[in-house]
Length: 112
Length: 116
Image (tube, rainbow over the protein chains, first blue to last red):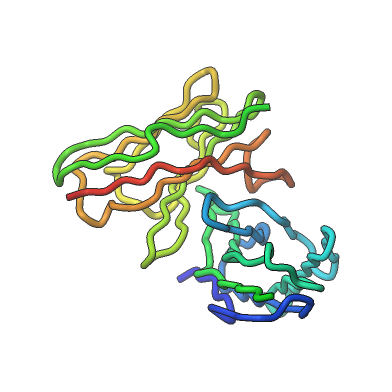
């Protein structure tokens, strides 16, 4: 059965800390891996990764994919209270009917 | 540019009834995807419509259906509602078919459905 696992499930850090969120997957017919940030409203798209080893960067956020070991990390440097959110990892599959599978999310709380 | 809109924002129904939710994508976007979010199951993909055709679908029973109109607006229908259908239903739009090319999805605010 296809699955996406995230760790840790929750995390509390102080402002200025660096955090690394993990996402591993066991799926057939992998197409891409996606990261989202969800605050109190709907998810916001962060990154889509399709190739191993290529880092995606957006400000203080960096993500990388390892297709051999089947995982991805999302790194946030110099965390701010505004980074507090649930970070969702999802994998899209190329099957006869493409679909997207989400992980349970990592709840990040950044305290001043 | 207006974002993704969903109507209604809140809905209360009883078991056995049916419900129709609506999603208007960002102007110019041709793909609409639907998701169900519950505390127990997290975010789950329902289906995606692109150019009025269902392109992708998740593992949901046939009670969940949808359609897309020529103006890219989409509706999702759930028939014979069950208590477990209580959830936040999110739709997301993207320029082209999602998950086949690199492109960003924009989510709407969601419809909170409560089944009593």
